[in-house]
Length: 178
Image (cartoon, rainbow, N blue to C red; front, top):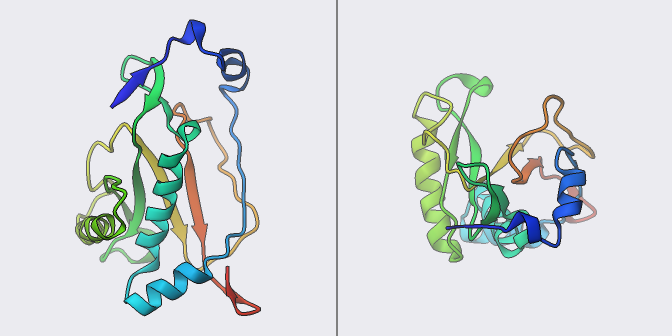
């Protein structure tokens, strides 16, 4: 569901107008030791767990859920759906597809749905497994073979307000998984 804001009376109007066409890139190192261990013990894949964690954080904070409806009106989504990259089975490391899984708070239900969507996207043979992507979506990608301390996109400022997360590779340092 999308709730349109009364822009003329919105307390953040001045701030929004000033920073509307700004792109902010923030890189943080995250200790995923506990999550990594739980996934290993439970035979779970880390990527769906990271997608779930991101979706839980994004959906828990209204500041991440601002957006525009099809008429271009500013508002607040009640829930955002993560869409994420999945390597294709055919095409080598160069090709990927994008899948979306509706966020639900229950980890097991989300993980099961995410794994089904990933499996289907791996073999779909095109960029978008679901076309179009949900308008209440936010992006996630992963570069598993690379760890980095900064990243940004060059190019045009995106027209939506949704966050985009990029995970790097997980590596061990001093007994911690970072």
